Amino acid sequence: MSYAGPKRFHANARQDYAAFTDAAIRYVANLAPDDRRGLVEKPLDWRPGHPSYFTAMLQLLSALQALNLPPGARIVEVGSGAGWATEILASLWYRVECVEPSPEMIQAARKRVREYLRLRGSEHFYRRVTWQAATMEEAQLEPDSADAVIYFESFHHVVDEHVALEKTLNALRPGGQLVILGDSNWIPGNVEQEAALAAEMAAYGTLESPLTADYMTWLLAEKGFVDIKRCHLVNGLTPTDREAEPVRTFALMDAHWVNLAIARKPQDGASSAPEDEYPYGRPLEDKPPSSAGYRLRQAVSRQLRNLADVISGR
Image: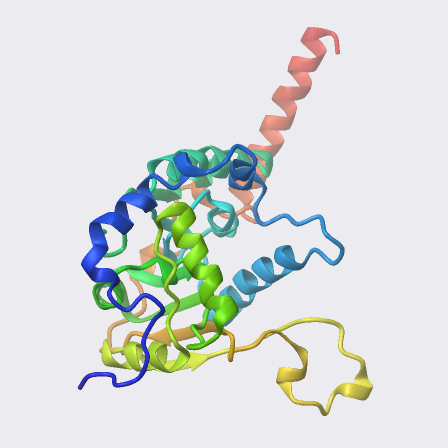
């Protein structure tokens, strides 16, 4: 059954797949020098209230809370960019497979993630992160292997949403979850929104084509996802005298304007993951920071540093 309503801002993107993919690959090269700062700064925001920082961080942390993944879970991050979300996922002891079309983005992300983990004494977690230079439509992912697939501010860049979601479903284990964050809904007839999307495409050549909320929900069901939920993002200290007000009163991001969606691959009776895929029985160097092995290594490292300081006369 086909969908009869408006679907997405650029309705015929698949006809220009090669051009949009090439623009995504060359995206970093087309950035002005000042814009390249975002490769290391994002999601920081020094304006009063830090609006984009809190919006980004709360989306990611709220999604992880909703996904409720065990330590060691495998996450596919689609459109991972320069790695600001990747570094957080890796430091929380997830295995992360990044799908990103731009080699320059991957180069920036590798450096950023390694340094982030090194500064937190967890550089050995770096080997749990991999990158694949590809679009989701062309990505090679092991079937039935991912506990979650995350699209963060990236689903509107997907050229063929049908293929991308079919690959997403195939990559997820039975019961695995999809989360889409930070994607505006297309509001047909919203002149200001459509002008901004057109200007972005003209400047960089990359696809800026958000989906309507109804089409997103229909498409997820059509591709076989279940338990589909569209969400508001709620944040803030709420005075008790406002506790009876509707959730939308406090929404930092309103589902009318933004596609924040969670869905699940149907269960088939299989267990969520083999027992040896989770923390117990792992090599000591791969234990989370609370383990005895980790504390022992840290103590030995401190003693060696102290000895080196004595020898050097510091």
